[in-house]
Image (tube, rainbow, N blue to C red; front, side, top):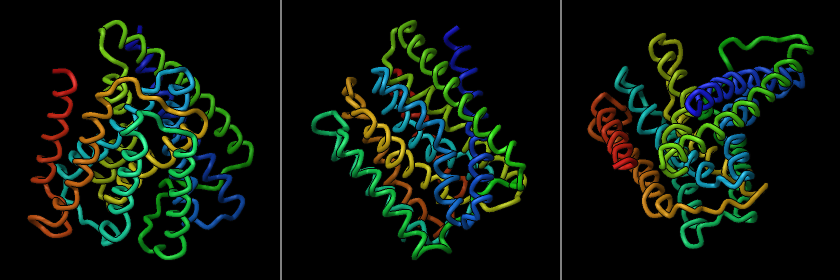
Length: 311
């Protein structure tokens, strides 16, 4: 039953996020907000909605390790699993914005998080405010100075929908996200108790991989169809949002207190390590390209990380 709860919860989260995205884009177009603003704010928040809802609900119900593990695991999965599989299928070119803005902001965000949580094991409300404020500053900077670096992330099937459909998608998307988070967390906590493993392990493995499925599916489909370039910036942007928005907003609502010290003594260093590793991989052996060789390195590291989770 726990596995069934997790599977149904993930399906509801994925569809709920998609419906919420359609509604958010619809309302934004109706309000005549520039597409570049929609892509950077509305779309980014909507695609992070599953992680955000799961983390907030986990923290409120006293399962902080699932909330924190979800973000750490998702960030590792985005680079070690999603990016690895994508470049194993097809070589991708890396934009200059990678070393000018994307990678530095991801590293600063990751180090900020580490600095806030490493010494007391608590992400306080004021620290959440600092994280979220950094996100706002970053978005304003991009809008003012780096518009060309922003990839148009609007859905391919973007269209003007009647108002009642926008409202309907908003309502059913919100209900699906909430219901999905209920089932996923109940199933995850139940599975942790049944198999006598920590909530940290469940959060970093099942929950984080599940919430990374949309990014994986979108990346693989785009590569196979060759419809639009896969941007490393999109995955890095997702990691930035996970830290600054998901953990930032969650800790503003309720401080996150880590109980499993392995999140702080091991897992967060894996996240930092794979984030730092991306930089040399982009420049060697082929400059500004990621090929199947880098894909194997990243996938090997991810599988090693998963192995160390259980053994």
